[in-house]
Length: 254
Ligand SMILES: [Zn+2]
Ligand SMILES: [Zn+2]
Image (cartoon, rainbow, N blue to C red; front, side, top):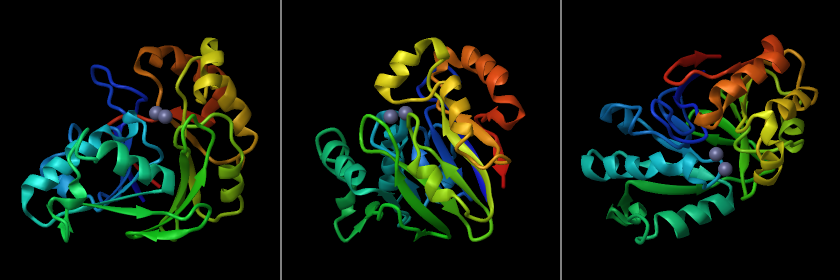
């Protein structure tokens, strides 16, 4: 499995793009930044967008992707997939002909550039060439983490979450897991804010490690750009060799 980091951050800054990952060139996991990280031919190869939740730092790139698809006239289309409350929010709150055009009816209702797929929670299901299990995590709005597997290797993607249990429990015993992609938003001194906003700090991540299989590497994304150096130092002190920050624009192989 190939994982290209289109955006590694929990916000936008100079050289910092919001969270988005491209699996095997075809499947997005979150779409905080897409068109700013990919050429047009690369955008046209995307078939699915797996969305953890509807916060803008995870979906802003999807609106520009749909515009690329809408203008290209190649028949390319993307299926936006998530749990029911996330799909409902995207349809009603984003692609609603007010905030952004309803690309599920463009260029025609019978051949649109956006399709939606509601995933069943806690059940493994086929998405393109992958197997995906969505599991709700602990955030301020309905949010799914995902277990993504290609039949031989897999990863756990946390979405945005504070301390959680169901996602780790769902992945327990699964063969071929090679990494956890885990969010961290704030440094330890903002623990109170992390608690309210339901995000991780390096201290909270250290406690999550005990819930995970001991050998599984933990790859961190979603640090807010203004806290990047501070969080990196704290993670290095508390996470050891097992925890590393994901690098934007790098491709990782499992
Ligand atoms: Zn976020
Ligand atoms: Zn969020």
